[in-house]
Image (cartoon, rainbow, N blue to C red):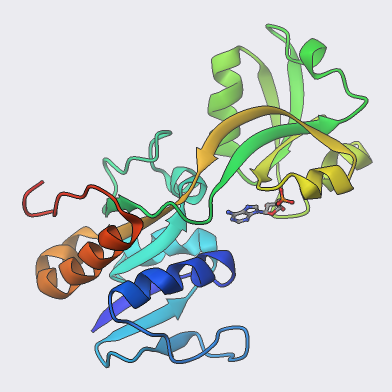
Length: 228
Ligand code: AMP
């Protein structure tokens, strides 16, 4: 059995065409079903639905053989800031180039960000991404008081909880709707395929078939793990 961990929403929707390239069709719609294990047209392949932030954990501990998750989630899980996975139990063969967005700093339109981030200044930052934010502001020499949030980050500057937020931005519409402005772009984000290293050895043929099909579908120059 091959188990693929996905999160509901954008990752699930944008992974479907990649699965189709591997000849895999998910047989139930997660928006309609309450099931957390979804069968596919291939009896030996199933999809498990987990929180986006839990995908690396499932794959790392073998609850799933492979999974799709954002570079942002991988970094917060302990990957390096470039998204590489040295030192984790995970293998990352592919940038799937889906669920693209960016991590940015945003503030209230009337907040003087340039003045606030002068060398040696102190800034209160609310974010779901403390590892990314800490590294970014440390490199600028700005001291940060980090406020960890789990959602609705845009509220923080509006209520006085924080001076700035570090959050995912796609179209920019959410920031605009809340009178916030994007003042710095920290990094571009896309979803990655991650694979459990032990599973890659034990179930090499079926996993290679899926990885190769995904690679073909995203048009990546990909060296198979054996050859790498
Ligand atoms: P937007 O209004 O298009 O800029 O989207 C911003 C909102 O969508 C923020 O609340 C983000 O947290 C969320 N978002 C944008 N892109 C992604 C993504 N690739 N994965 C998960 N959440 C995202």
